[in-house]
Length: 262
Image (spheres, rainbow, N blue to C red):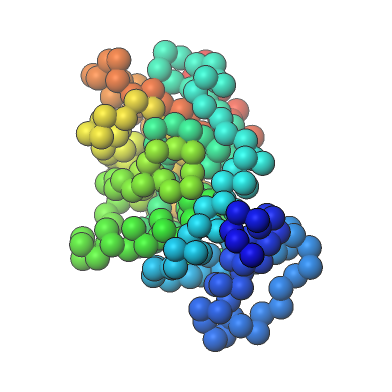
């Protein structure tokens, strides 16, 4: 059967079987009957897979599969939003649907994505929707760097199967107890580093997630204040530059940003 003749279910099964066949301990896994359970299995297999090459056939099928998944979710662009302020937008939803020039990934220090199957973090969501090539590119970046990614910096990669052009990866501060001045400065550095890197690549729009507020436990209100102030300070110094989308997923964050942006 050619790749063009495949249904979405057939693509799903092809990808599952390919990834299971890569490792002996995975070959005995039972494949669920329902498609939604199969999708969770595929995502899990992608999440735990180490960074290594795949065949062109796999990439062709993965491309068609992920593009169809994206078509079902729907793509959101700046034209679909109203500005909250000049050059600033607020949008609630799945960041992997945004067709901005770049989206920001709240990464960890390995920069390889989340290896926990179907974990709820944004790092996992972005790598799962982008495809297995993203982890491989991140691996090559880290091989060249020869050390863990420091907090507050940013790296850029291709976006692969996402509707955006690039992904900016930044590692936010991990809060353990009271928020310190250093935590706040590092979080501000994350936003500034991403904006500066976007400008270096002449990008015109960037979508920020709520960096550090999830697994890294940065208080949501303080994080939003830092994010907005850092972006506004940058835009004031660099007028007519980058348009910023604050992408939120939780209702709590939406209410905070909506209030702070007026």
